[in-house]
Length: 339
Ligand code: PHE
Image (cartoon, rainbow, N blue to C red; front, side, top):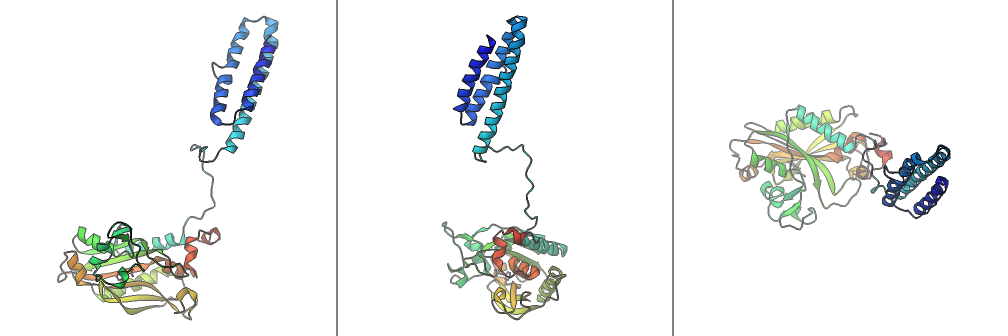
């Protein structure tokens, strides 16, 4: 009797599970057959009303049926799991797989070293937005209205009027002076954007660290001292690194200079990494122009100081002897594993 019943249930179950192709349907079947008030357990309950003999064989049949259903459900579950996309079968309770991704990106490592060196010299850290206003990126930094750097060629403008992706970290100078009274001594690390074509030494996204130090009595000699000390520390351990200062121009500093480091790839001979020059420019710097102070309502008769802005990619290339800036952004594990 009970054997017949089991057979009928088994056949029904086989039919149903055959037609089941998704998790919801499988879970319904599981509840209906194996749930606390399901078909199998109510059959087990009905056993008590049978004779001793019937109970023996019936019990065995029922156990076999239960095992069969459980096993088939398990198999179906794993079959469906393999079919389902990882997004819809995401189990947040599973422990993560150990990945083989290296810990420190060379740019991050160099950025951290730069921050470490300057904070050890007593510089604080300031941050500013990557989406910037024309005023902070250009106007308050004393860029004349028709300055070529404002040109579409260099700047990535956004749809909203007067907003752009900052082309340098210098706007953080202005934002900080607007918020705080002098003196100042901080660095401002971050991402910058320019409409540059990617090549071995240019990228439309790059990193800079701005430096700003203003007090009653800060001179160009202080600027040179700080930057020389920085170069000595960041290239510590690399073979004798040579630096040079060249006069330059920036609308927001006067006088202005650029610091070059001898190309570590060609040792000054000229190669594709340094565009044949033998030297790589790593930073621009100068004494803060009084006009910039005036924009920020800081009295230029009382306060003076220097600013600099360095390119993190260039420094990382020199430090590690990397010949092509594109390597930083390609995520090639063979490259990244070396750091
Ligand atoms: N902002 C300049 C640039 O991106 C660098 C710079 C910073 C120059 C501070 C002078 C002072 O080229």
